[in-house]
Length: 285
Ligand code: PMP
Image (cartoon, rainbow, N blue to C red; front, side):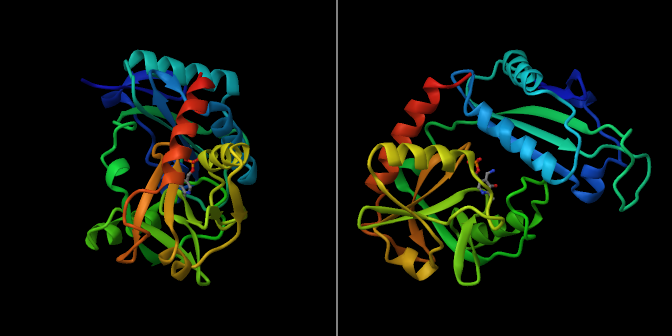
Protein backbone atom coordinates (compact mmCIF):
# COMPACT_ATOMS: atom_id res chain seq x y z
CA UNK A 1 0.00 0.00 0.00
CA UNK A 2 1.25 3.44 -0.87
CA UNK A 3 2.24 5.73 1.98
CA UNK A 4 0.87 9.19 2.45
CA UNK A 5 3.73 11.66 2.44
CA UNK A 6 3.76 15.33 3.47
CA UNK A 7 5.34 17.77 1.00
CA UNK A 8 5.16 21.54 1.39
CA UNK A 9 1.77 21.65 3.04
CA UNK A 10 0.13 18.79 1.15
CA UNK A 11 -0.57 15.17 2.02
CA UNK A 12 0.11 13.14 -1.13
CA UNK A 13 0.41 9.49 -2.18
CA UNK A 14 4.16 8.71 -2.25
CA UNK A 15 4.10 8.33 -6.08
CA UNK A 16 3.00 11.95 -6.38
CA UNK A 17 5.35 13.37 -3.75
CA UNK A 18 8.01 15.20 -5.74
CA UNK A 19 10.76 17.78 -5.26
CA UNK A 20 12.53 19.85 -7.96
CA UNK A 21 15.90 18.79 -9.46
CA UNK A 22 17.06 22.33 -8.54
CA UNK A 23 16.29 21.79 -4.85
CA UNK A 24 19.37 22.66 -2.77
CA UNK A 25 18.85 19.56 -0.68
CA UNK A 26 19.42 17.49 -3.84
CA UNK A 27 22.26 19.58 -5.32
CA UNK A 28 24.21 20.65 -2.20
CA UNK A 29 22.91 18.53 0.70
CA UNK A 30 21.78 21.98 1.92
CA UNK A 31 19.21 20.41 4.20
CA UNK A 32 18.63 19.35 7.79
CA UNK A 33 16.63 16.43 9.11
CA UNK A 34 15.19 14.75 12.19
CA UNK A 35 13.98 11.23 12.90
CA UNK A 36 11.45 10.58 15.63
CA UNK A 37 10.30 7.18 16.81
CA UNK A 38 6.69 6.05 17.01
CA UNK A 39 5.63 3.48 19.59
CA UNK A 40 2.00 2.55 20.12
CA UNK A 41 1.09 5.29 17.63
CA UNK A 42 2.72 7.92 19.89
CA UNK A 43 5.61 10.25 19.09
CA UNK A 44 8.66 9.93 21.33
CA UNK A 45 10.77 12.92 22.43
CA UNK A 46 9.03 15.32 20.03
CA UNK A 47 10.05 18.48 21.94
CA UNK A 48 13.73 17.55 21.90
CA UNK A 49 13.72 16.84 18.17
CA UNK A 50 11.80 20.06 17.43
CA UNK A 51 14.31 22.07 19.50
CA UNK A 52 17.32 20.51 17.75
CA UNK A 53 15.68 21.11 14.34
CA UNK A 54 15.36 24.79 15.20
CA UNK A 55 19.01 24.92 16.26
CA UNK A 56 20.20 23.20 13.04
CA UNK A 57 18.17 25.68 10.95
CA UNK A 58 19.52 28.65 12.92
CA UNK A 59 23.14 27.47 12.58
CA UNK A 60 22.68 27.35 8.78
CA UNK A 61 20.65 30.59 8.60
CA UNK A 62 17.83 28.64 7.01
CA UNK A 63 14.23 29.80 7.38
CA UNK A 64 11.91 27.62 9.39
CA UNK A 65 8.85 26.97 7.22
CA UNK A 66 6.68 25.53 10.02
CA UNK A 67 5.75 26.28 13.62
CA UNK A 68 6.38 23.63 16.30
CA UNK A 69 2.63 23.24 16.87
CA UNK A 70 1.98 22.67 13.14
CA UNK A 71 4.91 20.28 12.98
CA UNK A 72 3.44 18.19 15.78
CA UNK A 73 0.11 18.21 13.95
CA UNK A 74 1.76 16.94 10.73
CA UNK A 75 3.47 14.15 12.71
CA UNK A 76 0.14 13.14 14.23
CA UNK A 77 -1.68 13.31 10.91
CA UNK A 78 0.95 11.12 9.22
CA UNK A 79 0.69 8.55 12.02
CA UNK A 80 -3.08 8.54 11.52
CA UNK A 81 -3.18 8.49 7.73
CA UNK A 82 -0.57 5.73 7.54
CA UNK A 83 -1.97 3.79 10.46
CA UNK A 84 1.52 3.69 11.98
CA UNK A 85 1.82 1.84 15.27
CA UNK A 86 5.60 1.33 15.43
CA UNK A 87 8.32 2.92 13.33
CA UNK A 88 9.78 6.31 12.52
CA UNK A 89 8.90 9.66 11.04
CA UNK A 90 11.59 11.20 8.85
CA UNK A 91 11.53 14.97 8.47
CA UNK A 92 13.68 17.01 6.11
CA UNK A 93 13.87 20.73 5.46
CA UNK A 94 16.05 22.03 2.64
CA UNK A 95 16.85 25.59 1.59
CA UNK A 96 14.44 25.08 -1.28
CA UNK A 97 14.43 25.49 -5.04
CA UNK A 98 16.01 28.72 -6.38
CA UNK A 99 15.30 27.58 -9.96
CA UNK A 100 18.96 27.06 -10.88
CA UNK A 101 22.29 25.82 -9.47
CA UNK A 102 24.38 28.41 -7.66
CA UNK A 103 26.70 28.00 -4.65
CA UNK A 104 25.47 31.22 -3.02
CA UNK A 105 22.44 30.92 -0.78
CA UNK A 106 19.32 32.13 -2.64
CA UNK A 107 17.43 35.30 -1.73
CA UNK A 108 15.00 35.40 1.18
CA UNK A 109 11.93 34.87 -1.02
CA UNK A 110 12.92 31.27 -1.88
CA UNK A 111 10.86 29.11 0.46
CA UNK A 112 12.36 26.04 2.12
CA UNK A 113 11.20 22.58 1.06
CA UNK A 114 9.68 20.45 3.80
CA UNK A 115 9.08 16.73 3.49
CA UNK A 116 7.94 14.19 6.07
CA UNK A 117 7.32 10.48 5.62
CA UNK A 118 6.69 7.46 7.80
CA UNK A 119 8.72 4.26 8.01
CA UNK A 120 7.38 1.07 9.54
CA UNK A 121 9.94 -0.74 11.70
CA UNK A 122 10.14 -3.24 14.51
CA UNK A 123 11.91 -1.07 17.08
CA UNK A 124 11.08 -2.79 20.33
CA UNK A 125 12.02 -6.33 19.40
CA UNK A 126 15.20 -5.91 17.38
CA UNK A 127 17.17 -9.20 17.51
CA UNK A 128 20.31 -7.23 18.46
CA UNK A 129 18.97 -6.56 21.94
CA UNK A 130 19.55 -10.19 22.86
CA UNK A 131 22.89 -10.69 21.09
CA UNK A 132 24.38 -7.19 21.21
CA UNK A 133 26.04 -5.38 18.31
CA UNK A 134 29.54 -5.80 16.93
CA UNK A 135 31.38 -2.68 15.78
CA UNK A 136 34.61 -1.83 13.99
CA UNK A 137 36.54 1.43 14.23
CA UNK A 138 36.78 3.65 11.16
CA UNK A 139 38.61 6.94 10.63
CA UNK A 140 36.08 9.80 11.06
CA UNK A 141 36.12 11.59 7.71
CA UNK A 142 32.96 13.69 8.10
CA UNK A 143 32.84 17.50 7.98
CA UNK A 144 33.61 19.39 11.19
CA UNK A 145 30.07 20.59 12.12
CA UNK A 146 28.53 17.30 13.19
CA UNK A 147 26.43 19.13 15.78
CA UNK A 148 24.25 20.33 12.89
CA UNK A 149 22.01 17.53 11.69
CA UNK A 150 22.50 17.89 7.94
CA UNK A 151 21.70 15.37 5.22
CA UNK A 152 25.40 15.07 4.27
CA UNK A 153 25.38 11.38 5.10
CA UNK A 154 27.72 9.98 2.47
CA UNK A 155 30.57 9.19 4.87
CA UNK A 156 28.28 7.58 7.48
CA UNK A 157 26.85 5.47 4.61
CA UNK A 158 30.39 4.47 3.61
CA UNK A 159 31.21 3.61 7.23
CA UNK A 160 28.10 1.40 7.41
CA UNK A 161 29.26 -0.35 4.22
CA UNK A 162 32.73 -0.89 5.75
CA UNK A 163 31.02 -2.45 8.77
CA UNK A 164 28.91 -4.64 6.52
CA UNK A 165 31.98 -5.75 4.54
CA UNK A 166 33.67 -6.66 7.84
CA UNK A 167 30.64 -8.73 8.86
CA UNK A 168 29.69 -6.49 11.80
CA UNK A 169 26.76 -4.22 12.66
CA UNK A 170 28.17 -0.71 12.73
CA UNK A 171 31.25 1.51 12.78
CA UNK A 172 32.56 3.71 15.60
CA UNK A 173 34.24 6.78 14.18
CA UNK A 174 37.68 7.78 15.44
CA UNK A 175 39.30 11.19 15.26
CA UNK A 176 42.67 12.15 16.76
CA UNK A 177 42.80 8.75 18.46
CA UNK A 178 39.42 9.11 20.20
CA UNK A 179 35.94 7.83 19.42
CA UNK A 180 33.60 10.59 18.34
CA UNK A 181 30.38 8.57 17.92
CA UNK A 182 28.79 5.74 15.95
CA UNK A 183 27.90 6.19 12.27
CA UNK A 184 24.32 7.11 13.26
CA UNK A 185 24.31 7.00 17.06
CA UNK A 186 26.16 8.11 20.18
CA UNK A 187 28.73 5.72 21.67
CA UNK A 188 29.32 4.74 25.31
CA UNK A 189 31.54 2.39 27.28
CA UNK A 190 31.08 1.27 30.88
CA UNK A 191 34.07 0.61 33.15
CA UNK A 192 33.88 -0.19 36.86
CA UNK A 193 30.27 1.00 36.92
CA UNK A 194 31.08 4.33 35.28
CA UNK A 195 29.36 5.34 32.03
CA UNK A 196 31.83 7.06 29.73
CA UNK A 197 30.74 8.99 26.63
CA UNK A 198 32.26 11.81 24.62
CA UNK A 199 31.41 15.34 25.82
CA UNK A 200 29.25 17.59 23.62
CA UNK A 201 30.93 19.76 21.00
CA UNK A 202 30.95 20.25 17.24
CA UNK A 203 32.58 16.81 16.83
CA UNK A 204 29.35 14.91 17.54
CA UNK A 205 25.62 15.16 17.08
CA UNK A 206 23.92 16.18 20.31
CA UNK A 207 21.70 13.12 20.53
CA UNK A 208 18.23 13.64 21.91
CA UNK A 209 18.35 10.08 23.24
CA UNK A 210 21.80 10.77 24.72
CA UNK A 211 20.48 13.73 26.71
CA UNK A 212 17.52 11.74 28.03
CA UNK A 213 19.54 8.62 28.86
CA UNK A 214 22.23 10.60 30.72
CA UNK A 215 19.55 12.41 32.72
CA UNK A 216 17.89 9.11 33.65
CA UNK A 217 21.28 7.56 34.48
CA UNK A 218 22.05 10.47 36.79
CA UNK A 219 18.64 10.22 38.46
CA UNK A 220 19.31 6.50 39.00
CA UNK A 221 22.61 7.45 40.77
CA UNK A 222 24.75 5.95 38.02
CA UNK A 223 28.19 7.54 37.57
CA UNK A 224 28.80 9.42 34.32
CA UNK A 225 32.02 10.73 32.79
CA UNK A 226 31.65 12.90 29.69
CA UNK A 227 35.06 12.70 28.03
CA UNK A 228 36.72 11.24 24.94
CA UNK A 229 37.78 7.58 25.05
CA UNK A 230 40.03 5.51 22.79
CA UNK A 231 39.33 2.23 20.99
CA UNK A 232 41.96 0.59 23.25
CA UNK A 233 39.97 1.73 26.29
CA UNK A 234 36.76 0.46 24.69
CA UNK A 235 38.34 -2.97 24.18
CA UNK A 236 38.98 -3.27 27.92
CA UNK A 237 35.56 -1.93 28.95
CA UNK A 238 33.13 -4.09 30.93
CA UNK A 239 30.34 -3.26 28.50
CA UNK A 240 29.38 -0.79 25.79
CA UNK A 241 26.26 0.53 24.11
CA UNK A 242 24.88 3.06 21.66
CA UNK A 243 21.87 5.38 21.77
CA UNK A 244 19.68 6.86 19.05
CA UNK A 245 16.04 7.77 18.53
CA UNK A 246 15.26 4.55 16.69
CA UNK A 247 17.50 2.08 18.57
CA UNK A 248 16.90 3.62 22.04
CA UNK A 249 19.74 1.97 24.01
CA UNK A 250 21.42 -0.94 22.23
CA UNK A 251 24.23 -3.09 23.67
CA UNK A 252 27.62 -3.42 21.94
CA UNK A 253 29.53 -6.64 22.70
CA UNK A 254 32.51 -6.51 20.36
CA UNK A 255 34.92 -3.76 19.23
CA UNK A 256 37.40 -4.46 16.41
CA UNK A 257 37.10 -8.20 16.97
CA UNK A 258 37.66 -7.99 20.75
CA UNK A 259 34.87 -9.31 22.95
CA UNK A 260 33.86 -7.00 25.83
CA UNK A 261 33.49 -8.54 29.29
CA UNK A 262 31.79 -11.92 28.95
CA UNK A 263 30.63 -11.07 25.41
CA UNK A 264 27.00 -10.71 26.49
CA UNK A 265 24.88 -7.52 26.51
CA UNK A 266 25.65 -5.56 29.67
CA UNK A 267 23.50 -4.81 32.69
CA UNK A 268 23.81 -1.01 32.50
CA UNK A 269 22.63 -1.00 28.88
CA UNK A 270 19.66 -3.23 29.73
CA UNK A 271 18.70 -1.08 32.70
CA UNK A 272 19.01 2.19 30.79
CA UNK A 273 16.98 0.81 27.89
CA UNK A 274 14.22 -0.15 30.30
CA UNK A 275 14.21 3.24 32.06
CA UNK A 276 14.41 5.13 28.77
CA UNK A 277 11.46 3.27 27.24
CA UNK A 278 9.35 3.58 30.36
CA UNK A 279 10.01 7.31 30.87
CA UNK A 280 9.78 8.35 27.23
CA UNK A 281 6.51 6.48 26.76
CA UNK A 282 5.09 8.43 29.71
CA UNK A 283 5.92 11.68 27.90
CA UNK A 284 5.05 10.50 24.37
CA UNK A 285 2.67 12.77 22.43
N1 PMP B 1 25.01 10.69 16.18
C1 PMP B 1 24.75 10.62 14.87
C2 PMP B 1 25.85 10.85 13.90
C3 PMP B 1 23.45 10.32 14.42
O1 PMP B 1 23.18 10.25 13.10
C4 PMP B 1 22.43 10.08 15.38
C5 PMP B 1 21.04 9.71 14.95
N2 PMP B 1 20.42 10.69 14.23
C6 PMP B 1 22.75 10.17 16.74
C7 PMP B 1 24.06 10.48 17.10
C8 PMP B 1 21.72 9.96 17.81
O2 PMP B 1 20.88 11.06 17.91
P1 PMP B 1 19.37 10.91 18.44
O3 PMP B 1 19.46 10.25 19.78
O4 PMP B 1 18.87 12.29 18.52
O5 PMP B 1 18.67 10.06 17.43
